[in-house]
Length: 232
Length: 232
Image (cartoon, rainbow over all chains, first blue to last red; front, side, top):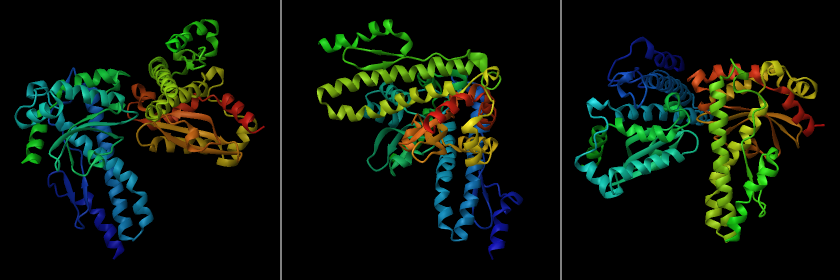
């Protein structure tokens, strides 16, 4: 019985059913693949260089996906063997790599070329909520920039909505922790990657310049869609 | 009022003893300045590029010192006012920036150009201790490289000596936490910076290549001196 379970897990590579970005094996272990960017690598220049976008997507995000899948398979195996020590030991790799996949998947949708609306301020209910909760879009940006600049080490700065309290929040998370680790009712609208790999080739040590500039390519349309869905 | 004047006495004192790397005001708050590198920025090539060395030293390390000094002044003020919440609140900035200064000061001494002994294996008691504890220098390097590559986010991988147990240890610390945060009797011998800024311009996402190459410029003479002092 155990043998056939292991065979089935490896079925992932034999007959992937291309349902969206999920590969389904007969056992139901879903693994993941790198989502395509909805724009060219160079389309966010001069704000974010094409070199950074390519490395960030093809190397960093891909690695999180690869390692997340590996950890998921090891988890599946450990669960089937009733091996709780290994299950617990895997949580670090699952959180880091799963979080990395989640966060970067959101990030690519948070960005858009200028000629596709990147940088255009949010209208509708999100724009109104920002003015209400932060005073203005400018002061929201300043707050996120300050928190992003002050973040020690690697992490993310988020604009999120608390779907219980119906309130916008600015939060930071360390490493690849998703926003939900700061509160179970928090839904990410915008995440800014402040790991050095997100900006160093272009901005070197000057993280504040990266943060000042990234607003020029923020895709507020996506953020508004998510916000309206949670506020409905 | 007089206290603020005395704090600025620092710059006068620095003119008297600039080689100390710190300056003393009449109130005895010791502040810090950037230590010189004992080699040119390009002297560690091709293992570490001159561009990285210059940014790492002049921008990153300098920023830790600047911010550490700022936090120290704020801490001193809070202490003199009996302002306990501020004292506690400042500990994060103290640990991060003080740790950054401590760690990088060690790091520059851990590196040496090849023609000044960089990469030459340790002789004497440290070489013997490494063979005893790890089997060989290669095994130690592999262990540290593996742990450095696996470190999630930003941090350091250390070879240290436990001065109580007289034992070598390999440890990692996150962000700018010094080795002593992993154990009060741990003394750092070799620290390898695995923050992305330490390698990204040259090695991009391939941290393992950086870790493989850095051994070519590790200054084992310094590590041996520290070890012999702790374990005479």
